[in-house]
Length: 401
Figure 1 (cartoon, rainbow, N blue to C red):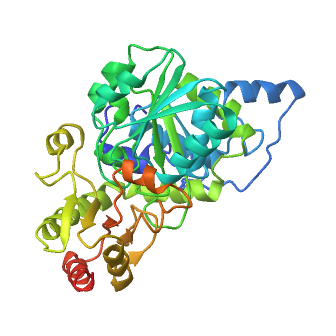
Figure 2 (cartoon, helix red, strand yellow):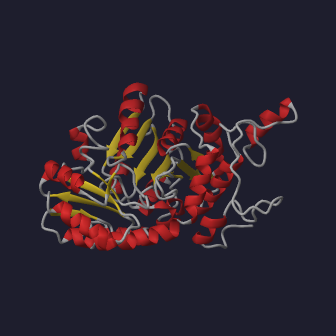
């Protein structure tokens, strides 16, 4: 059954498992908790590994039947030829990028990134393995174009970026990188999810990356990561760094992500509606200096968000006038909103980057400030609770800021 004729909601529920189990009629795919698979001959092993996981398996570090259902569903949602499922989003970053670069190569990256991605690029690739990395303000694609060198192999951006919710113009980025056949352009789409944004729809964008832990799974009960793109590239990454760095998703986690993906559209619709109300409330609050939410006309990239995102998303960042003390006091005063570092959950989660995910152990103060992360910045991932209850909790917590 083809996928192009179906809507996103149908693909989220059925892709990769259209007709259920032909033997039992099971609606949900089984969880294959088998690490090994029997094969007929010695020669069959190499054939299977070379051909990829199309109905034949050797060892679950390479692929697993439950994982394959997930990968087919994710490929359909991203509009990709193929997808790979990893045990974490960080594993997806590491496997994808290390497959593409060697010592002496060059990467252009957005300066505002998830803290673990920043650490990987700066402290591991650059400082230990001799891969040069240039960080640029990716809100202006001209900065990316200016940073490209003959040795550039990867351009890597997040949009919306973590945690400042700044955007990269995907159409403009693609127009730049499509003229460089030796460059692979990777877009981290975690804050949007494929329901709100499909980077692969833009010519010149090669790979989309998601932390499946977040919106795709949506319940804070599983870790996972995704790469999606051309089949040839995905097959090469599987045989190279997914298998040999040991990063595939396990069968139980793959099943949990599959279950979460089914409700992705319904969850995100509600989260976007609630986030809009909360962002408008925060913008009017006297203790809030600035609100960063693509659904507000005050966001400097409001029009860009309307062009490339179906909705503005469920993530809000706001800057408190009182700085570090105000940020920590607000977080510590929440009664309903949970203090937690993840996002995309059914529960509303808040974090203070300067003291939590982007603290001095992970990102230097200078690099943090260059990324637009001020000491009073608070990141809010809006969940599925009553909006009135969330507003009441914000009100009482801000009173203590």
